[in-house]
Image (tube, rainbow, N blue to C red; front, top):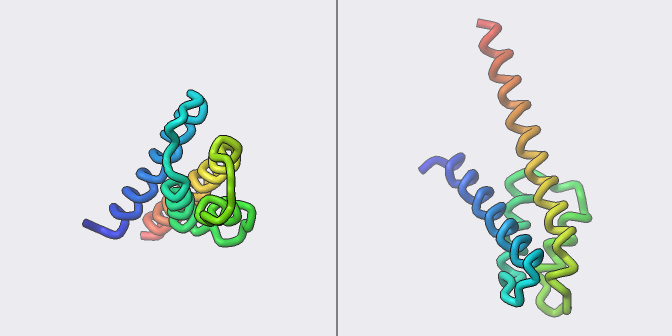
Length: 109
């Protein structure tokens, strides 16, 4: 299994966890995923998208992973969704840049 495959699997699994969380919150379910699960998913999204500049998104991860804080998983949904969209946008931008680079290299030869 290549590193790229592992990274894609981690990213896809993280997105799936967040989509499940979103669905459960919107359905007003009392059975939400553990906050650590969503925190780890958010961590992987930021890490794999190379997001290291935006403190706002990392603070969301900290809120989820700091078990000494009392937080509402219902209230955090919008922050988590915003983080996921941001990470997906960064990945898409990176893929587009890589494709453009590959295309320009092919044109040289």
